[in-house]
Length: 163
Image 1 (spheres, rainbow, N blue to C red):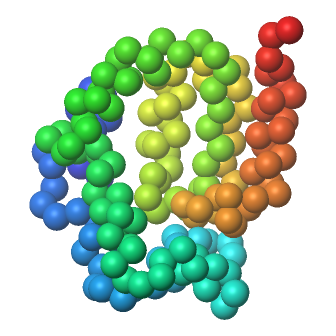
Image 2 (tube, one colour):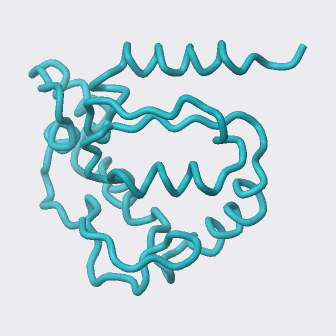
C-alpha cells in the first residue's frame, strides 16, 4: 500500500480510492494463505493453515473478518477516524506510562520507518524505552512468537508495576 501525504495526526490525506482490505478478495479465499502472505520469516504448515480456517464453518462466517480491515481509521473521512484522532489528542499524546514498540522490519501493513516513528515521537511514555525491530512481516506473534515474548518480558522487567 502506498502512503500519501499525511495530516498532523498521521492520517493519509486525501483518502485514496478503494481499500486494500479483505473486502475486495474473492469469496472463498482461505484465511491461512492471506496471513501467510504477510509473513516474511515463516511458512505456514498445512495444519496451521487449516487451524486459521477452523473458526469458519462456511464462507458466510468470514463476513466480519473481511470487513474488519476496512474499519481501520487510516484516512480522513473513514468511519472511526474522528474517534481515533480524539484518542491521539486526549489519551496517547499524554500517555506517560512506559510504552514500547516492537516492529516487524518487513511489515507490509504498517511499514517502517513511519509507523513506529509516529508512535515514538508522539507518546511521551515511549521515551527511554528499548524500541526494536526484528525480522518479521505483519504477524509478528506468528512469525517470531518466542522473540516477541522475550521482548515483552524484558520490557516488563525494565518497567515493573509500582508496588
